Image (tube, rainbow, N blue to C red; front, side):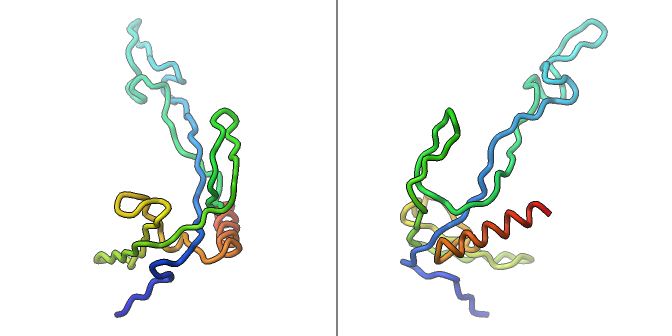
Length: 142
């Protein structure tokens, strides 16, 4: 079987990301108090190990990746444009019992020790990328 990647070395692409924010979930056993008392003795909560709860990640939806920076106080993203990447490395991984998976590394996010991008999250135009985001976001609502 011959595998053909969606993009080739040197192609310029736009990528999509799933934004996530941390959310603290209070421990149901100690109600966030970090300790429990039984028969007059107080000890660290055995469920949360004295943390009062646990951090989870909540999806804020898919969007086309942009370059810029985020204001840490207000969490407002100061955007400067859409991030276009140049493909410099393409990999195909096909393990027994799974579908072949294409991954790429790009010049702008590091090759060798940088970010590994899924081929399915890369698009030729911003419009195609936005359309994929809209579909993924509507699918997550249903």
